[in-house]
Image 1 (cartoon, rainbow, N blue to C red):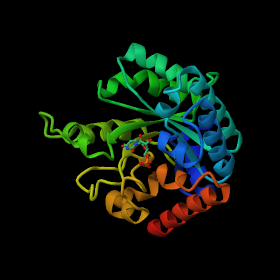
Image 2 (cartoon, helix red, strand yellow; image 1 turned 90 degrees about the vertical axis):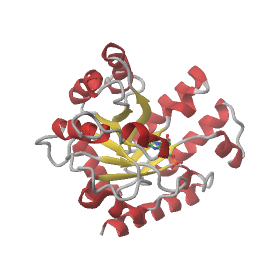
Image 3 (tube, protein in one colour; image 1 turned 180 degrees about the vertical axis):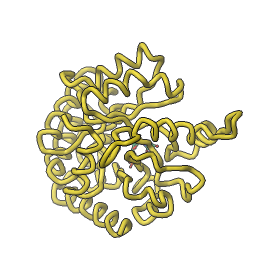
Image 4 (cartoon, helix red, strand yellow; image 1 turned 180 degrees about the horizontal axis):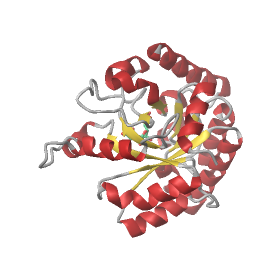
Length: 276
Ligand SMILES: O=c1ccn([C@@H]2O[C@H](COP(=O)(O)O)[C@@H](O)[C@H]2O)c(=O)[nH]1
């Protein structure tokens, strides 16, 4: 399989630079007239995948909303991953895994081994047990042609106390994570496969070097208050590598398929305008 970064660049060029999150909140299930049970979860997820699977570059299922239903929720997630990929969308599993290396290897097998039922094109991971603890995931992603998105500067205000903490050498934790990612992506063309999560809500980030030669997943657009128009200010010269991500901002338009498609189109158009 081609490296994730290559496939992502092509998908964004062909379909527009937008990632739509699949976040079946209990409140959204209710708004869609569905029960907060496995049948409601399955109906919600199928509707989103069928409506947008041939339109958006990337889906980002939020694993938590599936895991809360146990094994039957995971079965819904497995089906969604397969059907989304069959429709040509890339799947970025938002599971934010992170643990000591030996356990990280098992998480990596779950999401990044090609024959796993939950194999995804990319996975979000947490570097807060030390970047080196992610090595099994980095290695398996390379072997499988998959990618990683490492939490660097998250969209929530609470993230700053950890991510902007300054080390003895004067660098912030986030800058250290970004430095590791730049090293992973060195020499990759057209785009590396090892991305950072950098919130669109964070305002001017010019004090950070975002030139990691990899994708920058930008959650926070829509329900968290950021807009596509904020992207150039937040990302500066790195804006071309941004993967803007919207969940509730699109999902709240369901269950009507045409309305979901129109909402995703609107966000993609706003992103294109902002990046021009
Ligand atoms: O820094 C981060 C990292 C991940 N997320 C996830 O993205 C979506 C955001 O959903 P919205 O409805 O668009 O607010 C959600 O799954 C988060 O867990 C994030 O928001 N910020």
